[in-house]
Image (cartoon, rainbow, N blue to C red; front, side):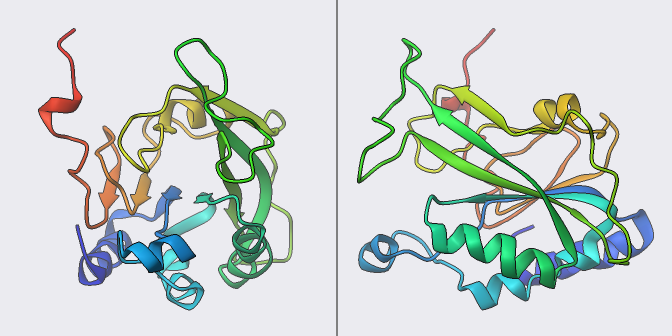
Amino acid sequence: MSDMEGLKQIVEESKNGGKYNCIVMDPPWENKSVKRGKKYNWLSFDDIIKMPVPQLTEEGCYVIVWVTNKQRIMNFVKKTLFPMWNIDFQVIWHWVKVTIAGKPLYPFDSLHKKPYETIIIGRYNPKRSHQPKCIENMKELVICSIPCSQHSHKPPLSEILQRYTDLQENSKCLEMFARNLIPGWTSWGNEVLKFQNVSYFEEA
């Protein structure tokens, strides 16, 4: 699936095939450098709000959003986007990028680049009359890994989510703005095959 028309097809299919238990999204956030360099097409806050995420989610669905380290964007997700989508904020995770030696890629106090990215997690609660059961071991989490040399390639979260949430291997999951495929998941975006090229893989 690639464009918004493709997303409409996923919405229609979810009406018959069941809604999703988990949605991971990495939106193309607006920022000054992207505007200047025109590196990719970005979405405004209004564009993201209009996305049909509530139509795709089962009650209790995990909605997991990658954000930049801009406080404005984090506040938007927690205080505007999640409430408008009837999502209860649960927890924040961080992905720390490290070198082969296990050291942070950049100093934590760097004013330009941080060695980590932020993941905001919520759960879909359409009734808003009760709090969804919060998984006891779903605490703040730090994920450490060596990043791919390709820009904006995030680590897959499928195994981590099965370990730290009540999601199962057969849970229905969707990745939006995906740049690679995950076994058993539905992937949607303009670049879902970007990192599937054989040049990114090594023979076992």
